[in-house]
Length: 366
Image (cartoon, rainbow, N blue to C red; front, side, top):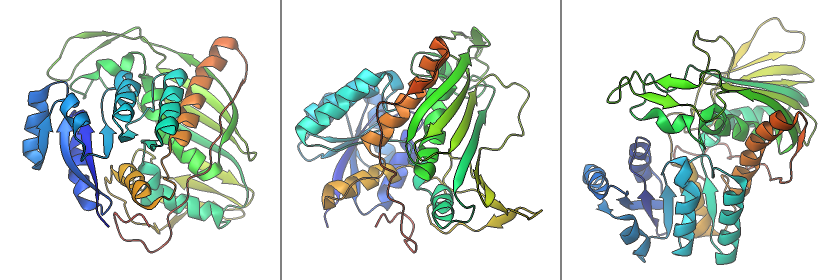
């Protein structure tokens, strides 16, 4: 089977992981990269032995069948729409878009054009979350009744070279890290029926202490501490807290899922591997469970490769636009609920992504 030729738009920090891992899949071949800064694109292309060019030239290349969109969140929808208009399938970094309206435009254009669209995160395809899904489906903790999830940090201005966009529209802890947690929760527990929440910005201004922008001030435009409650359509109730305001550290777990027969500690959804622990009802000990699936290291690109495989074979892709939109709507729902002092009832739904089958080798999708 021939590989689908792919171009990357956006050559920032995350692009190296995609360009490196892109060589490992049998469904896609990354042949070009582009950026608004063409010289930066050419430098990245030389590093990975591919073609560097302008965005316009990449979109005009008839051999490129899919675009991986790694631009900043504010540009996600616009670049996706450009790529779809050019007849390319699209896989975009999270969040799917900044607004629900933009995301709907992307989905509608993809359907009109007969093209596939998908979105990060793809960490739920890693061995950690895939094993967690298998354990739930095999009844290790009984019927799920609830979950808790926490992303507690002090913000990105201490380490990221250009952290401004994390505090602008489309940023904040919910839009930055919420997609990892919500996608993992939906993959394990199914779609969401309604949410509620509260949100605040604890610090109106941030000072960058990383290089090269040490000392620069950043005005905060988005909530930086968000607490939400989730009702899943199948019945479980979840709690999700995301924060850039925790300056003294935290000992909270990433995700715990509670069932009628036990509890499960789920690995960090921002990574592909990790440790799973289960404590069954009546036990006094937590038991570590070995991971049953591959792709436990940094396998970013799995989602794009899965979409490429769907293009080539006609099967459904796991990191679908419908899943990404459902997660985006839930994130906005927390803020709508916080502003209105009410519950937000979800208008969208999605299918749980198909889990991997046991026995697949690393970087294999079927």
